[in-house]
Amino acid sequence: MTSTIVRTTVELRSDTFTRPTPEMMAAIARAPLGDDVYGEDPTANELEERAAELLGKPAACLLPSGTMANLAAITAHCPRGSKVLVGDQSDIYVYEAGGASVCSGVVLEPVRTEPDGRLPVHRLAAALPEDPDDPQFAPPGLISVENSHNRCGGVPLSGAYLAEVAEFGRRQGMAVHLDGARLFNAAVALGVPVTELTRHADSVQVCLSKGLSAPVGSVVAGDREFVDRVRRIRKMLGGGMRQAGVIAAAGIVALDTMVGRLAEDHANARRLADGLAGIAGIEIDPARVRTNIVMFRVVDDRFSHESFIARLADAGVRLAELGRGQLRAVTHRHVTAEDVDRVLTEVAALLDPA
Ligand SMILES: *Cc1c(COP(=O)(O)O)cnc(C)c1O
Image (cartoon, rainbow, N blue to C red; front, side, top):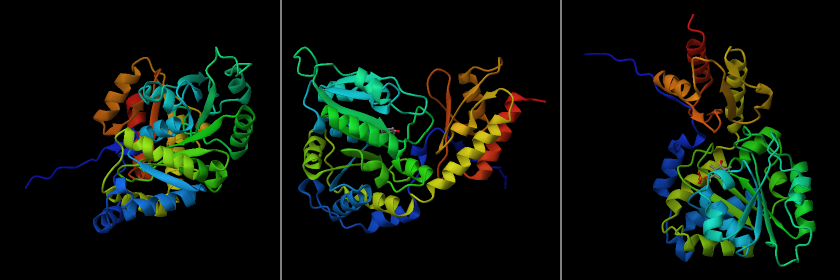
């Protein structure tokens, strides 16, 4: 018999690589099911009720992805031709294939994002016409903010900042949408109930499929009339799912059991950042790491970011490139503190081959 040493890959490209827990698989197997397009899937209905309650909104709707959730929310808020203020580093602007422009017919106006993920209110104001009634301008529609902010390194935005945006939105007659793909990471990092972050927004989308480990799904929450519109738009986009309880069953377990443990992912991200900061050839500010995302650069003439990613992949460590040579490592349920130490050993071995 031959023996082989199996070294599993440390997957740091994204928390979307998390697989469903055994408890989720068991819940899927026993979930009562119906046709959710008829509103008759009891498990999907239960998830939507639980999510609405948790997010502090009257209603919620399950969608297949965060991308569709954002698109449906934007479409439900805004007539065609409206202006939607988004961060120039936001997922909606950068990574959603321009869907809001193509499908919703809105004018996406990118607003320069602070390194900490905020869109300062003065910059939101500068992106709006002085006279919104002047027919040459697109009418104001929606402001969208992202929390935690992915491309800014997973920084959480505080309730105090979100309150400022809400106040500005109210004055302008614009709704506020929260792209909370990782909202639970933000709430855990800030040590506040998630409702402290949602109460300033008219709508919110959260991903069940990232650090919460469900295989598929996002939820949009808001008031009842808004969620009814989201449901119709979901059907229009092809996101009406029949026995959606198969997905929702895992989502319920995700909401019930996976939020508290996100603190572990944050501690591992901090451990990774602190370790990387001690390796020559890595440029990183560990103080910026607040949740499960670690952003850094390799500054070593022997490597481009591509060759660095490739060499680390050979060593069993997968990282993502996030534009302009920035590297991203995301911690999640399948990354342990020992894995982090192994990553640090591999990175040090590559950069100091002494
Ligand atoms: C991942 C993500 C989305 C999109 O979610 P998908 O389920 O991948 O479509 C939207 N917004 C943010 C901030 C994200 O990180």
